[in-house]
Image (tube, rainbow, N blue to C red; front, side, top):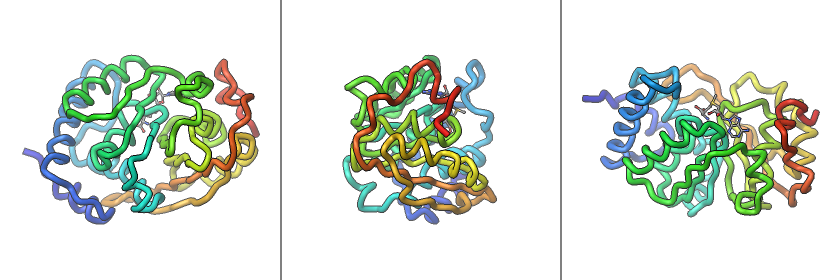
Length: 242
Ligand code: SAM
């Protein structure tokens, strides 16, 4: 029913094996997404091969920025502004040993994700409705995560204030940025410093089976973030630290 040749080629390029269960979970996820997308705005991309490249493979490109040894650990991961589940859900499918929190400020999307988690029988997934800058001030979320991932949410300076307070000291955030993101990354220097982070690595490449340029920015958390951050009331977006 599905032509998975492109997906398999891309996974091979990323060095990822795909079991029958993982393939089945991706197919189920695709079907649910397309179905719900008829009544709720989840994604503009619905053609199967395009979803394979722009959603699944792009999400899984994390392997290019984080070592195999690190990814194999039972990490506690949060995906900030996950939307329809990217990059969090494909990552959970391929790294089932992780505990993952899928966080989004839109309740409808979070309810969709709860259905996905139940249908795909994913375990250790927490779907949370809320704004990252509010949750980042709560003890249950603040400095709890080994890894924070985020794609297409906001510019780097604001994103750092949303994400880094959630990361435990020694952990990291990985921002999925486009290849043309140099300016916003430079601009984010002050925010990264204020959140007690440092850019450890930037990995630029083309997403497998595409011409789409990605830059994965890895920001390591050095010490605890000041309790001044994140600021509430939408300030990380309205008045980014620059
Ligand atoms: N990460 C997904 C992807 O790459 O397809 C979704 C990207 S979508 C453009 C941005 C998402 O971030 C939306 O679902 C929105 O509700 C969520 N969002 C925006 N600001 C947020 C915040 N402060 N805290 C949590 N989620 C937020």
